[in-house]
Image (cartoon, rainbow, N blue to C red; front, side):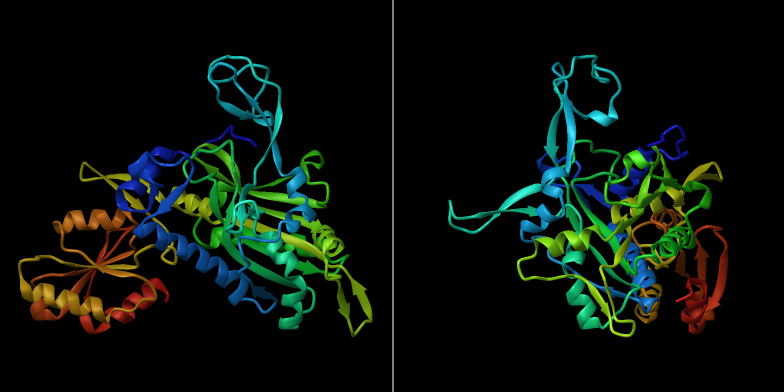
Length: 441
């Protein structure tokens, strides 16, 4: 992974903003926390939901050739034997004999610890899957795994979804869900964690059509990020060299983003051939063939698979980093998130200029109740209007509605826009219309 370039944003600034404003907290913080596990706060859960909603809309709702799935986290352990995870889903690791820190072999150069210069132990294999038990009687439980990816739940349900939905290739099965990996090399805030969420599509095609669909999904997935506001200069494709491809993969590209720590993977698009379906068909106990029969052409075949797989948490981080802005306004720093309104945790904030004027507060609450913009709308009177604006700027709220003394007589309010800080005076009867136009809802 190439890290020679870095974005101009400090990851600590992003992490501090997330903690201060209620986006993301360290898990179990009052007990000292838990390494590389994170909790999403009131704003973070909204941002994360919006990212997933936009992915689902683009992948499922806007198409006629994709169906959704929500497979269980716990699966029959034979699943992971057939997929190869039990035998091969491992990292080669070395431990420093002096500082005791652990490193992946492929991430260190030379024979000494980069932290303290101590000597390394011999390399050993470390399986990344979390193991647990099913069964309440001690000694009679069965070892199972928390899934390390969502893809296998799609593959084992291929025939179920295809038959019930009556789809024929090319068609896809989409899933968003939690995955778990006992990562050794963690860090960089939410970029790499032990519990994370994936947005994954398995797109099944007729063998021979895989190349054109692979190229299609490369372009389609890149455009999703740019359409939601990420600077195209901060994104790039990196094709995997032959020596780093999985043995079953025909091709693989990463969409990389210029994170504060350098260019790093945001999403992978892989051409997985027919490996997964054949593996599960060969191991299944009920004789499932996982083949597709085309009654029109009288052909039977195992579909090839194109897999765009992205991380929800990495996407959240990329959208935060890319929208982060800092500027001086009248000799004071103004920090704001210039984030697309579709992703913004709060769409509109209603603010009374004076909270000690009951009639202004009453009017503000009535406006709050009347506004419906397809997302969260909030009321805030806990500071001066200038501070309220800065607070909403910092969390990415696109528009603020301010009710002032004049509103009581002219029936108008001030709409204030996050990025430009420009203001419009709008009749109360037209607020919903104007907001709908500005936010395109």
